[in-house]
Image (cartoon, rainbow, N blue to C red):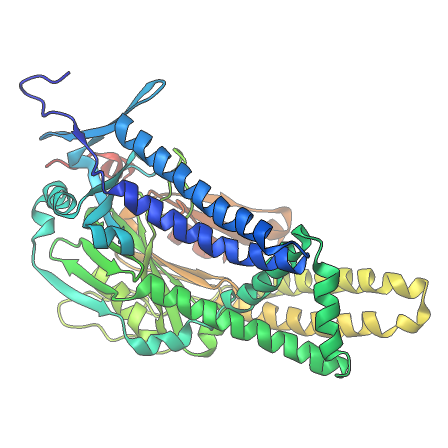
Length: 510
């Protein structure tokens, strides 16, 4: 029931029914292809294959259509000057309410079918760390755009500066990462899994072996690796194109960010500048080797995974894998500061900006390297002991622990040196920089006013070595940012950077 002061409840757009049904049908049809292949390899007749695949696809599509009809019948929403509410009335009634003044992040998304039908999904997030989220799927495109403008108020039409745009040459960085070999292994695993459903694994392996049994084992191994890398490369490039096609990042005068990207699913995401707490630069070994990096934003209500209500958080991604100077330049534009050098040359400060007091990262004491060397030595010894176990029964396998020791020792030595080189921090008037890791190298550049506090942890071994591990607590991102093995003489300077907690917890007016 509505009062004269309250607007009427409105329904979602009915075009979401054919849109969701079409997308689900496509997904089911794609999944039916490997299932059909597995059935044929298992010796099933074509009639049964068509019954299970085509019939299953049709049945699944019908179920999705029915569920969408029910969802639209029980869901409505309304917007007034103070709040936006979504109500679901089925067996019980649930109402999600979000204050318009607390909406900080807005995402407008539409896949190919939704774009064709003129509808879009609107996702809202409030200013709390894991605060209220509200999703309206789906609205007419014009209604969603107008609602976005109303929620963002002046930010939706403020003057903007473009700070990044997709360069097609960045595609060459897509295969440089863990996704490439992992995708190849997943592809092999899926084929074997589908074949196993129909007991076709022996027949399939026999068919493959009949064609390669005359080849030397090293050639077979290299061939499998090459096939996996080719599959992984195609998958990595496809994911990059789908995720970042048409990417354009803009910054408003008030510090808010607008990010547009996506091929199959177009996304238009807005980040409130008042909720930005910093940025994170990711540099895994593959990207470091080619001089590239990627950038995420650290902001309230943004992150990886699910929030406390089980809903997917808005993605923090700002810039994909690209030449390192691109994410560094974007980071400086987002933060309005020259970022202290994290590697390579120190960046010169443009006119009108302040330079942190220490533009170079401070290295951690040598005892931190010794701790990593000890851990690497213990890991190598453990792997060697495991590999040596079969030698007790079959002495002729002596070469296995020798090979394991050589390979694991080389990797451990590299990881020790690289991990220690990755340790560093810098404290400036407005920014704090934390860098760590080797395989997962990351540099967190946090705004000092956005740091709520620090946690200090010391193991007995760290206490003897004069080291501490610090955890910065922030309302944005993962909420905790770790800096291991800091010299205790420098730790106080770092943990003194926390701002006034109550200033960050206060609700902005207007």
